[in-house]
Image (cartoon, one colour):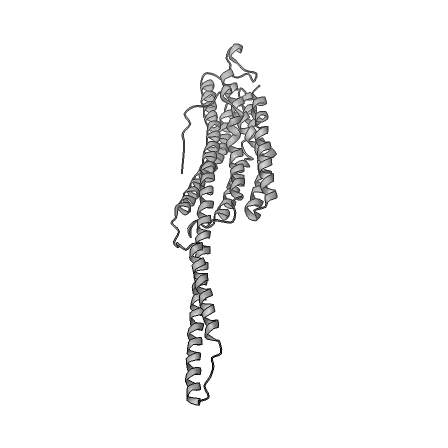
Length: 336
């Protein structure tokens, strides 16, 4: 499974609403993929793109619904750390488990997006097996028209002699010419049908390749956005590791009884209080973004993938823009 280590926690000065953008981008990109005409068969082992994207969207929903790890539990546990020395560690362990679970879902989604991207790349670069063109079809139709005219000419009534022997010979020759002309027309008609089918297949293959190329580019963006979401929760996870380390240090030193000048509002070391605020803000902001904007939009995305509805496509675009506009209000106020 894909992993990217985050070697340090972010500080309050580094907490930016832009960190949340990958979550919006994931949903917006799924919406763009839903507007690609038709469906793209990616091979027997992969199946169709739309079916796989429907499954993918269910994974995104699981990643965005994180009911465990309530942010305020961490702060309350630290506030009660004097009376219950073991509480902060227990709460942090539980919270970190919830964060890690979400992060791991995003890691798997990133892998899935990359796999779909590669499959679309294969379809986009596949060589068309038939070289039939509209020119070939025009030529086949011309030959069929010529064969049709020859049949009409062959069926014309010919003058007959009064002698029976000559009549029999002339009729036999006439019937032979008609039969030959009829067979020629049937062969020309079959050739036209085959060329027409080949041209349609060639056009469809070309369009499929073009659509797959568009999907390839969008899936590249989707994989990158999933990586951004993974990094977001990796930041939260690293904050929790730092909190655990700080709590352990203060506990070994006799608890958070430090000079007031170095304490925060919670009566704990200010550095610890600061990183708790960051962890809470990051976790809570992603939860509010999902609940207020993205989960509802995901329902429209699933409808779009099923119906290719222009109305749903417009709704997804509009809602994702609204979500992007809301980002500044999701993180900044929490850190003031």
